[in-house]
Length: 131
Image 1 (cartoon, rainbow, N blue to C red):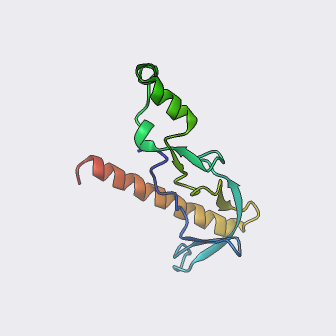
Image 2: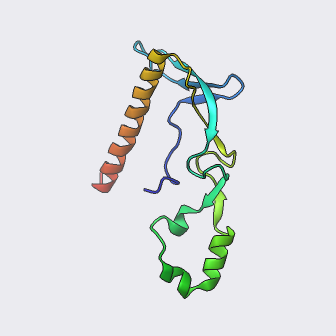
Image 3: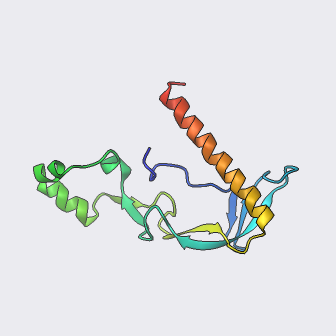
């Protein structure tokens, strides 16, 4: 799977007015955890707000693809196949946990994030196996 296709919501919600990331039910007794947030440059589009549509080049392009169709090459490099970034939705930045977040809550949230990505990996493996 191309990173431009995946779900990027590794948190439950984000309150931009308060600059707080919420992790629902992540606490030891099932309570929500709120952590201070900062904006960082989007890793998916490198802060451009756009990227090439993964349907065009997710499985790779070769020199031959461009040599065989010079018009495609010109359009590709001119941005004709670009779409708004799947992660930041054109905002060019994404929220991240602030460095000064409380250590214990940050560790709990990071475990929640690890569990989330592990569940995505399991789902992908099940799809590959035909489940």
